[in-house]
Length: 367
Length: 167
View 1 (cartoon, each protein chain N blue to C red):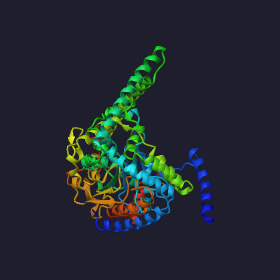
View 2 (view 1 turned 180 degrees about the vertical axis):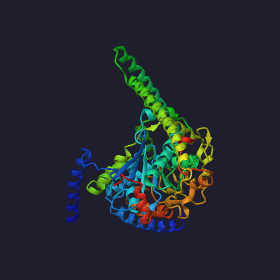
View 3 (view 1 turned 135 degrees about the vertical axis):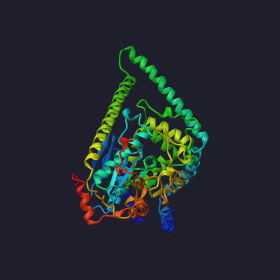
View 4 (view 1 turned 60 degrees about the vertical axis):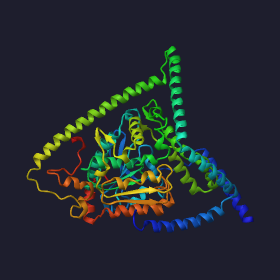
């Protein structure tokens, strides 16, 4: 009993200290700290190569991560002990990430074609050039998965060895609120602000509406664990990311709204640049990772990917996680990410010492 | 679905459920009470926000907000212009013009790159006549031509490197 009182007193003292730090904005965790180099850039888009710190590349081809257009890429590299990218690197994979930057007025006219026909093929070229490897593996997360699928479908000539889509919406009829938002009253034009883009506030409110009690539950959890420094560091990093969206280009929103309204990806009626897009033309091995507890992209909306592509090896990996839990947190590190790494390793070639020398020679400014 | 995965994941889930039961018991009373209320209210609200009725309500609210914003802009613009001061809308319009120029610059850059790549490809084609073929890394590793890159293999004179500007 005495011990319990003492523990409660200690915890309350720590709570007070951490509350002051939290409210005062002190001790903010540093995010996206893994060492990396910008190996290519165009307009706002940057291609980052994560450095090999002390560990050689064990597998080839390199993995190119295509981020979503609505969120910051540092969610994949929150902290050194909570880093999806760090774990891929530890497993010997050579990791590149295409970060879209923060769109402004100049990007308001960007359409899906801008990303799929201009930025992404050039980024793949840059990965090939930088890594010295003639093939690339592609990983698309959330909306980035849509971009990756459209890329592979429209450009079958690109040297994509294998593809992984994570929490990627494809059947918009199963998307709940986001699926029938544009059918019932919301005009996409109303969501676009004076800059020609959808503001980060609008995007954030859209996600908050899906879990109306999410904020208050999150504060309750914060109060419960406020004494715990380790929890606080994780909470602050994650909290920072959930409040940190980027503007979504207006022209892409108009296309996306039409794609959602007509369920064009599932029905195969999508046209880009005047040409029809057929996911059936994707022939590379594909793994579709779906999250059972995903409240943003419900599992039914993400599941059909393997049935729509033309790949002989199209598999599904169903994981007991949420949308973000696929890549962030202790459970992700122990359960979900190892399965993904295993799949990448099975679809890559181990690098021999001689190959490693050749790969290294292609990169003169690394390390 | 990947073979073997569901079984191991099920085992892990069972272990986690056991841990969760222990975790719930050790939670403070206030948290247990909060969770009860939050779960009951939260699930009802989450179901409601997925309905078409809520989507319609949201649509009306967004539309109204957009109209009010436009009306407010018109009024304040008139007021500020009366005393010859620039407004937020004026700044946005200048920003839009600058953005338009930036986009034109991007287009011109792309066209120049396409021209430059066309020139260098033509030069490469001349210089590579009679040059020895160099096998790419991993070419001997069986599945290097797997996947989408296989589509290039059958093309006569197909260039394995993507060249989006040429399309």
